[in-house]
Image 1 (cartoon, helix red, strand yellow):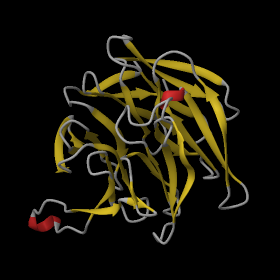
Image 2: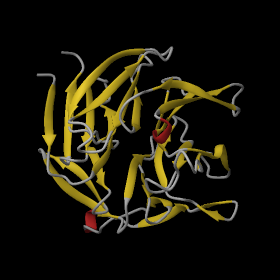
Image 3: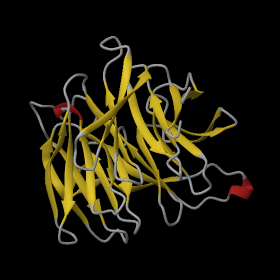
Image 4: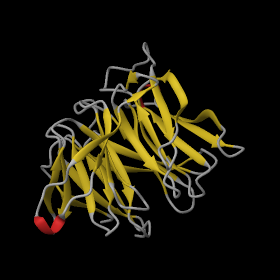
Length: 280
């Protein structure tokens, strides 16, 4: 079978991602923990004492960044002395825009140069169809500039990813059940449009682009509304190509390994991490 279970019973797990050593990490929104996967077991790396929604490693330095809903901030791990066995220390990286506190960051991604893009939507129910106040921001790699790509206009924007060439940013707008595309032309100027509309389920929660530019989308629904989760595969032109079925409806996160041979998937209702072999 191309689908295998890596871990289960991990709580409200989300945001699978690899560090610079190729070790898979996830976070748990309920407990505040960030875990690494070692020999099929969860090993806690740190705890934010909040509600982490996304974790990402800086592609250049390997520093861990955490979006946290309770802290309403993006947190960053400071330098720690691993040889002394000290727990990593978290510091606030971004907490506000133009003097206004963030709602609660919900998704984050880096480009190859180290520029950061993140969604700020707050907890589910804070930015809705009736109150579309979520935003998408960009932070320059030297942290000198924070600017909005879409300000206070989206209905719970969550996961996001970049195309292989870094010129297109895809954003999951969960409550509108669609994927938005931000195309960059010229450099530094982003144009937003609707890339793909879905029907059924609550909406897309996470996305990841493979080396060919195909977009894999985790489509979330509430437990009890559906028995299966769906991963939709969109071609670069936005057309639906195929769908993968996942046990459990609350599909929260996606990532590829370095060769894009395996797709790693988190599902919150069972606290499970799955691995899908895309080459079989």
